[in-house]
Length: 349
Image (cartoon, one colour):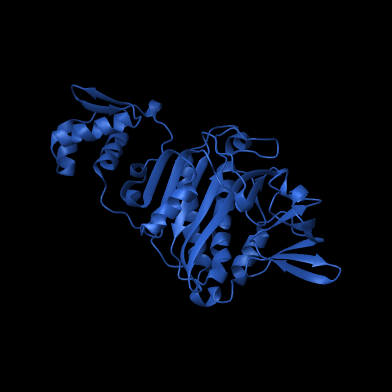
């Protein structure tokens, strides 16, 4: 699954990124336009235009006789591409969009590089699995990752497992409390949903042409119900979305480095599945597997409207990412696809 590593492959800073870096280094002290211009090899007029563009984007930059000043106390939690320094060419940001997954598909069709990150302040039509809606309120982290892996379509779930492991590790780290995975694509903290993932793939023959993973993490946003929580609720304070995003991207690279090998992925990855199972909180719980296609006329929970396929004990996942359900007749295996899992006695962890 080789591709661009946007965390460790920095490029030349843009004018906006360079100016922000220098102003932040001064921690509230002004920097003259001439110093900024000389450091970047551009004119003072070009500096002024870049500063004005940053002001229009919402940054509190004052123009004084001694130069430009960025007040650290007025800094906001921005996700603009230039916030990611030399990696900004991989980032695409929208103040409001239907879904970052839609934008990821458009970028994929236009030939965007694997490793591209699409973020949004708000989504009007955020997507979950099987056509469900992901409620995307201000303050949450909503983004998609575009990948171009050299994998068979049958192995797409392995990329999803990598992303899930990276997200649950990050949530545990930033919240200071253990978070857990639930099959097929959710992250829970305090027995409440805090994050979710969804996948879209496009193939050519039996190979993946491109794949996008949509990730939603409740950070500082209000949650839609008592069944959900946020990082802010768990910690009692606001969390930087940018820091969470960077941590997730770093964790993705760590998981890839630890578990990826061409040989392993040709037949699934036992070590990856074992790591996933160690991070799940409902292994051994009673569960039902059902078709996750809610009725168009009666959209309650999928468990109420989907056809039950089997009942048994959830025994984790196999190396292909399939759910293992232990029944009286033996083990049954289910792909992520259009099936979901409901736990009848979830763990208290």
